[in-house]
Length: 253
Image (cartoon, one colour):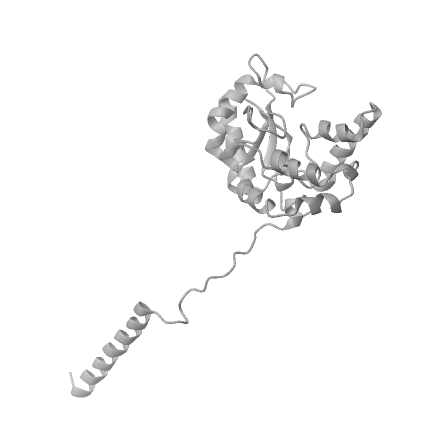
């Protein structure tokens, strides 16, 4: 090798060393810059007024939730159960329809406004506060023996009921697919009554709940004029937030 070629080769070796050293020790332009985390959920989505992408024929759920639910459904079928979805995603308008129907029905029975509201929120949420707004929650039953007139009734899931074996299967298997009971039968839990049919997909609903906790629930409820909303006092709203929205299965908080 000639002297000139040796010099060229030495220069290349030196250049490679310098470049590698720069990568190894880094510089200010290459150092990652910490940025504020962008909240993935909009207020509209959290209160049922957004336009999230939902999938499913007999139900409406977020794509990831639907995928896991189909796995649960298939394995439940192998165990002898026919999973039927009574309710899944509900937007604000739909939830408001439920609210108004129940409110008017109680009015017809001459039930006073405040008692009317308390009676509704034993099982039903105020529009804008429902977990069903998120596309992560669903109410399911076993329809192997048909669908009863009152499918979402605790008696069907209790011992001796037509859904009891299905409940036991869900107790053992639902979490394998990421689903957890929301309103448990814990004696210390307050808020909504026990709902053995209501399951939530934790991987998405848990962060959505954390985002929801940052919302001004008082503002959400007072900005939307609902039947009976003139009775939503500050104390009522705080109690509702603490007991009905947040007092749920600890596994998904």
